[in-house]
Length: 362
Image 1: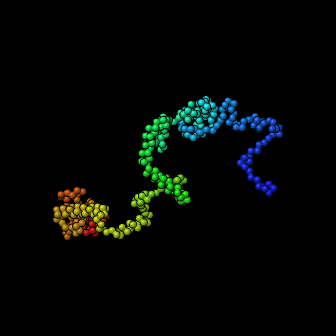
Image 2: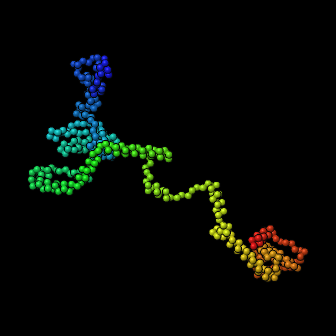
């Protein structure tokens, strides 16, 4: 603010708005405003202060199991706990923290352990057992109290321990040098490292924008889990799928095949089947005709007139012979002579069509 042409700077206390309302009936002889209103400065947190209980904010110091809901509660979960003193260890106070589980109505209580420099579970919860070695934790194993006292009191043991430390140092000298070189390489040029970090961030953001475009084009409202690798692209390119042809393309393809193929194609199964059936019918007809005319000793004007379904009339120069074979070719067909005036051809339309078909083929 500017007052009368001068600039006034406010400190942190003034920015927190510490101004308080003082009622008209208050005077300094009545003490502070909290005393005047009959309340504690911590308000609801100190509602049980007369019982020695103060409500504080605490984090769970380790992983535990709740006895009420049997659920796991991780380290770092925060609770409003009732803090009270339950004892002392020499001059150190032992504090107890009572809190309610956020998943059920069970109350849990832990206490400080000054002797073991840890917390202990007293009721409502069980600490999760987590045993691991210093090697599993990738840290150095600390020296216990007995070994430390032995090093301080026994000079020969201390000398042996120093010799062991020197031999270990010689073994890891190369590794330490590599670590120093990597450390110097990484932090020698801060500007170059910053450039690398910014470039990687730009590449990452570009990939995100590309993924968003891909999702939008495919109509997917979720990130695609996998990215195509060069091996996947090569494998996909090697796959061949049949194309769906339209009706016009199918017609054009059939026309080209017809023009390029031969009418005497041997590979056509339907053509070969038709030819074989045709040859079998012709051979059978010739056999029946030969048998009939050999026995009758009559030469027909058209040799194919012997292939009939019911009856066939054959005419020579003087007489007219009517042949009526059975369904199965008999050894002696019936032959009878009739007058020429009484002859009426007994050829139906189907018989004539069959005979004309085979005669045209020859």
